[in-house]
Length: 367
Image (cartoon, rainbow, N blue to C red; front, side, top):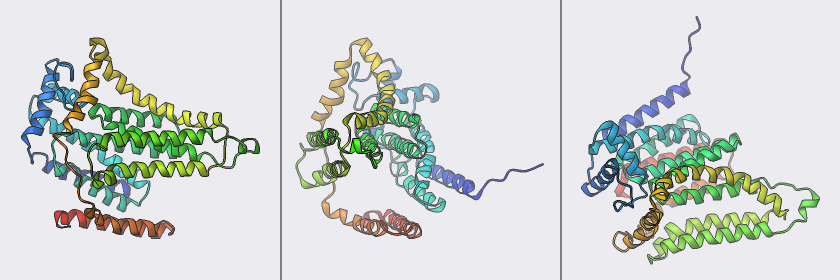
């Protein structure tokens, strides 16, 4: 009888998956910070007793993590370590997604090295079930769905990407940044569809280009309203500049495209945006349903958008000084050099970048 044998690539992937999981597990019971663990556990325990976040008690985050923690308490018991088991389960699912995404750009060994670096630089550093970890996981899931859409342009991948972004919002309201990032990516996809248009479309208008420009400006302005209250050039460089750079690039690219019929561009863009927005709406509307039923939408709005703004006055921390960004210069230089190189050279440069990343990871505070 024929026997099936695992391929070397499969063996490599399983080895990476197990290595990352075992490494994270060894750190799972370390680094306990009382106010973090207590905040997360108390919220989950209150939901377990039947309370609704933001209505029956003041919830620090959106409330989705408290609901997930309550479910974990019900199944595994009320224990601080239960929340870390929930985090570990999400981590184990996240590792294959990171590897799959890295494989879109690198060979299996390089993708494995990137995955191990990502795993080592994640929850082993601080294994509390903080919402930011789940935001990272859902962002990775959304990215993988967008990459999959490029290979297999079916709308279901956009829907799943939207569901991931919606769940990220339910964990912590900063998931809105993931929604904005995905919409920018989809706008880029829409621009990529505009190639050599027929003569009748080449004489189109610039209405859609103006719409893209205004939308990008609104996004930058919204980010400014959030971060602008904290003065300092570090805040602008770390938070506002990346958004402005991406939006500016999108606008420049838009105005370099040939004029096109507004309805054609709207139709193309809507075909990308609608499935994603539908995916976002599915978990968000399900989360909003009990608030609408109990008349608690006002309390939810206050807990998500008003109270956090007040907390910024007492719980903000300035970003690192700009001189710390000098460590990024070697990476930027090598990435710039690889831009026009053949594939083999790019893979070698990617290996060098991974080695540098590992060096920085090992040296830590010594840099």
